[in-house]
Length: 119
Image (cartoon, rainbow, N blue to C red; front, side, top):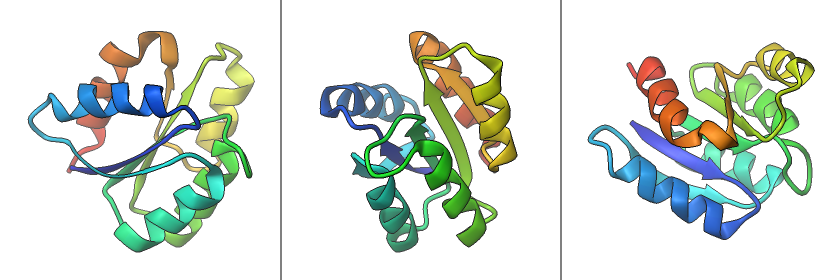
């Protein structure tokens, strides 16, 4: 599964990369640190999935998700967030995300989420 990682914090992205590439089915093909670059990179690389933080510079992960899903309905988008507020999870699903993973459970839940959406 080819994945783009999008988070404003380089250290967090590196941790995600290490986590995901430690599994047997994920290849991180690109990284972005803001919403607009995430959409541009997605258009260029056309990955299987995008893992994006809900709070991104430029515009939010929700807006980036909406744009990605409008361009590429088959790309799976998983939102990462620190918020347990159900409103954000509902918005993520409304914009086309297939998952909403809390950053404090990222290790266990992200691998599970990606595994459930791989073809």
